[in-house]
Length: 141
Image (cartoon, rainbow, N blue to C red; front, top):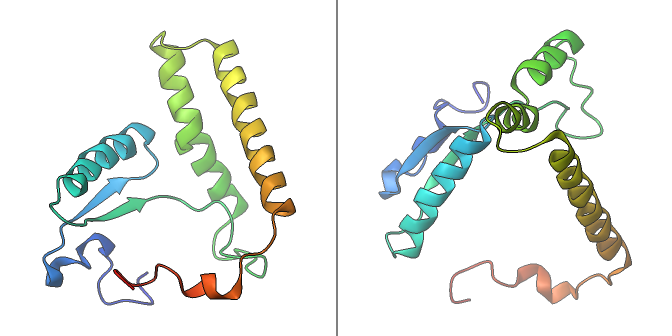
């Protein structure tokens, strides 16, 4: 972000338009959920949009052509081991007695099944008509 913009606080991008913005620890599932609920209610109450900046760590490069040579494998491994959102939440649930190891494994299986079904649906579905490319881009248009 520093190389592409004078302002690195992405959540402030709406300030000039009167759109509030908030930076959230995107590595904390509960903080993301809390911010999501708050600002979704804000929008549903007709109070307008908000810019939510989820500060996260990207484990891989931007694309297949990005080898991510700008950070070491050790750095990525350290962040994954110490801050991974899913692992951190699982630990909190286990430590708090909210969930069991078996319950979390079952959730993991269910999520994998959902993802597999969604992928199969996407692979077997026909492409949309070309006109759909321009649908719903502008409000009322």
